[in-house]
Amino acid sequence: MLGWLASYVTYGVLGLAHGSHLADALEFFVHDTVKIFLLLSIIIFAVSIIRSYFPPERTKKMLSHKKEFMGNIMAALLGIVTPFCSCSACPLFIGFVEAGVPLGVTFSFLISSPMVNEVAVVLLWGLFGWRVAAIYISAGLLVAMLGGFIIGKLKLEKWVEEYVYNLHLAETLEVAKKTLRERLQYARWNTADILKRVWLFVLIAIGIGGFIHGYVPQDFLVRYAGPQNPFAVPVAVALGVPLYSNAAGIIPIVYALMEKGLSMGTVLAFMMSVTALSLPEMIILRKVLKVKLLVVFAGIMTVTIIAVGFLFNAIL
Image (cartoon, rainbow, N blue to C red; front, side, top):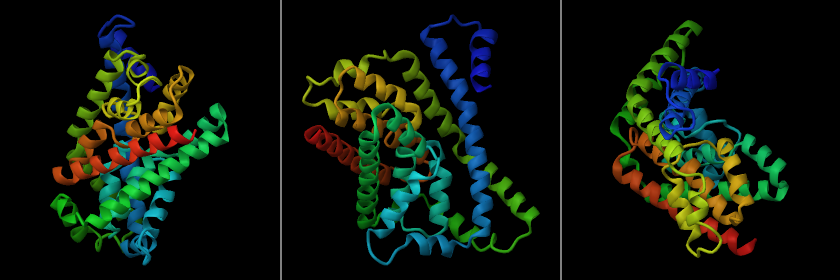
């Protein structure tokens, strides 16, 4: 139905020509705007209700392991089985901070959740076999664990926007003992409040994705990050940053790139940059992170993703 709606608005209402750059970009924008705001509403509402039943101390105890790095491992593993994309970054981040989860552990989850998911694993297994699927999972977990661990060691809590911690102080004690009706009212209020904070950032992010989708040629990556280029991995990462997609949505592009001869490490780095280092995600995360922390996060992610790309190109 979303596809039909986007097509109807683009071609039926606005009368744009099929196959034009503007039509492709606008169709993508309409489709993903409706989809993402629908998903955001459902996810925030569901997370708000679930959070009202589980005291913050329980989540904190589960992910704040006494042994350093164990919390990062658990959070990265938890991210695999949670179907969240980068558009959900703000409510997820706020929820983890409210629960008292350490910042580094929170980032391990935020990196792993959009980067690795069970749908993408199944698709990769079906297209390329279990070895490629295992490489994808291993690389995603490695980046999530290392990225979160480094951010945790740097102690950058002061670079999180103040209102996030204010929400923690104001709300975590209020949702512990409520009736079902009160929980639903709280979830509805929390959903509306977060959407009001992030809607403009989400629209900007989708607009960038729509422009790339409509105006960038399909063979652009192959042209500049082919096997003959020794700097193919950083080029692939740089080209993946402006794009917007989840892990499952990028699989068809991955398949096409590998069919055209791109190496596994290069394709893997491109896939990771699209799902966990995209410019749209950075724009959305800016609502909860100060610029300094956003730059540190992006820098760590860039270095680790490029390193993983080179590593897998060397061993495969």
